[in-house]
Image 1 (cartoon, rainbow, N blue to C red):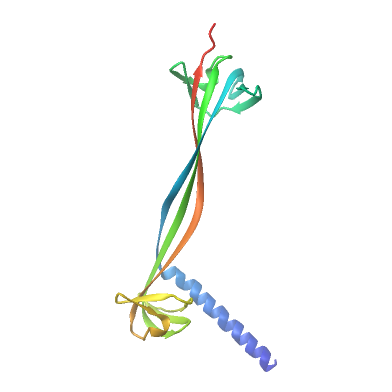
Image 2 (cartoon, helix red, strand yellow; image 1 turned 45 degrees about the vertical axis):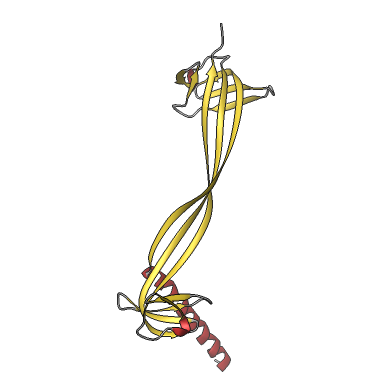
Length: 193
């Protein structure tokens, strides 16, 4: 085996060891996740149609004013207020005029995770810190540029840390997401006969 191949293998093994230590260390942190709601966007719509066919949990309506026919699958237990009386939607009379007031809500959310790690500095360099954790275990952490550590209320960079200092490190990650929901209210007028 050549010297350059040995050096390459040595560097790869060391890098793998550092990555495995850093990954295992994440399990030692105290972590909490909270969800922060953002602004909701609500879009109201109205659909009106005449019931022309009804069988089981399926309803066909002639949409007004376009005259298009649409098939609706009725959810179990869905009701409508027909002339002020609430009744199961799958029991309305043919010819009933239904108006659905539908509100679609788009809600932005952010899941914020705060991970806090406490330990005593065992060794520190500008890009890595070895901490003795509360359970007595030594763990190495790679330090991203600009990261600061809380030492007795003062924020310090990795190169300012000295063995024996008690530190607290906090990592905050945010994951945005969007939730969608739909609500509807059905009102109707029974056919006049």
